[in-house]
Image (cartoon, rainbow, N blue to C red; front, side, top):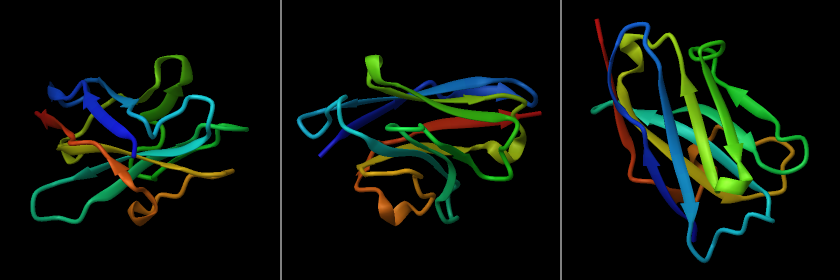
Length: 130
């Protein structure tokens, strides 16, 4: 299994930016393999929702849900074994705990369905206030 460790969360004012990182490690992770990786978020009492996905092989296709498109950018650096989520123009509705997820896959698209992923991090809290 892949070990995932998120960082970069914090408190920011509306309109601000944060960059989340997710380091992949463990015997189950090999940089020469292709993975589907994703960011999800969850607010207490609500269902976890997908934010963005990326396929790390081939065309490195990405997907962003409508609510974050144009504000968030998912990326992945194989040399650093790290998944990123650049979050710009943050809104109060972006307040949540953010989780990264991964699974070995063959692409070409990484699904937004959380049931597809078998490795999860512990999450990092993002709080946006006005």
